[in-house]
Amino acid sequence: MTSLNPEQQQLDPQGRHQHALLAELDEFYDAVPRKGARAEDFGPLTLFVREGEGWPFYARPTRGWTGAPATAEDVRRVLARQRELGLPESFEWVAEHTPGLRAAIEQAGLAVHEHPLLVLPEGQDDGPAPDPLPGGVRARVLAADDPVLASAVATPNLAFAEPGTALGTAGPAELARAVLQVVADGAVERVAARIGAGAAAVAAVVEDGSALCSGQYQRVGPVCEIVGVGTLPSARRRGLGLAVTSALVADARARGVRTVFLSAADEDVARIYRRAGFRNTATALIAEPKA
Image 1 (cartoon, rainbow, N blue to C red):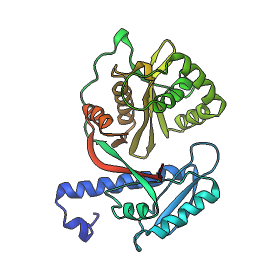
Image 2 (tube, one colour):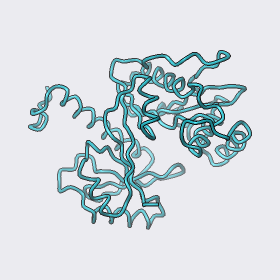
Image 3 (cartoon, one colour):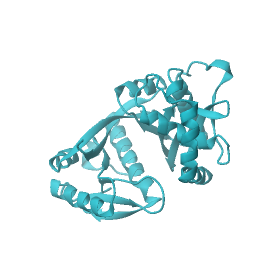
């Protein structure tokens, strides 16, 4: 039997559950970059440096740190190392798990952006089913060798280039060019390898052989994070994002995942995910240089 520490003993059952959930999310955020990066120790902070191709990683609070909290000087040391390595000057963490870090980050001159962090309650499925899509179109999980995978990797890039939920301009022609880019830079091959290793899954709404909307989850043990759900801007306002999210949740549950979570770009996006049963749990913080 696991004993509770004094802090946990002072919490009611709901508080203990929240404490355990935040610890689980912190463990996940620490584990994900370790698969493709080396960790550099800066006391209360850890910098993850990508080894090989792929998106660069970030710095974050050191998991299990029991010493003095991070100071602005600690943050500046990490920033200097990021600049030395030519890495983005970025930090990511969960506000409620490491509440004191924000002040140190801001004192070091970085801007902090808040993103709602939502969790699908354990034992709950994907909640209300999204409205049926026209023409029998549905979301499906893609195999590593699915010919749609390239467009599924490319579609979110176009979506995030035109943020928001309103109809946009990028359509099939732009998607065709984006597919060529993600194939050329090796992104499709890397995603396929992660699918094959069981560390990720990709789902997409497919029409005329291309992904109109797609997203992924990344998994560590019984926890997964849904990431990169994006709709081709010209295809928005059709409920495609919820269809993709539902397909990813169903696949994750079938593979034994207990905790499914995501962070939303803003409150408008969070409102959409709450329709699928997700609940606001915490706040994901991302720090970067001021514009």
